[in-house]
Image 1 (tube, rainbow, N blue to C red):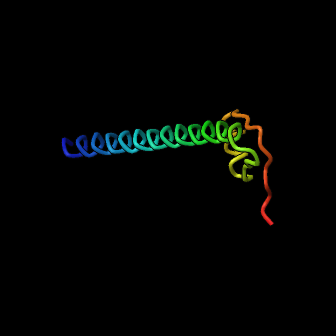
Image 2: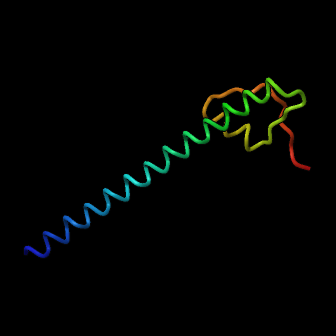
Image 3: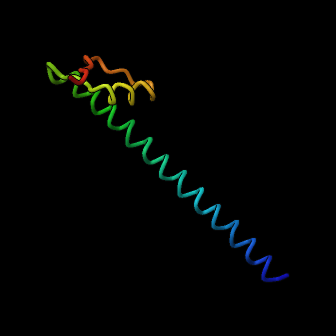
Length: 75
């Protein structure tokens, strides 16, 4: 019985650690993507002829960051 309890507790701890790791990675990716959008937003105001790709536009739209630059579609 004691071994079973230890196994259950160990399994729960492993699941909790994995969930925390996944949440940390997700939060880090979100911060990185937002930072990229803010960088592109600044560059669009500085450099004439600046443009975005479709994936950049979608990424920034997802976070509600507007960039005044045309979107170039692939050939």
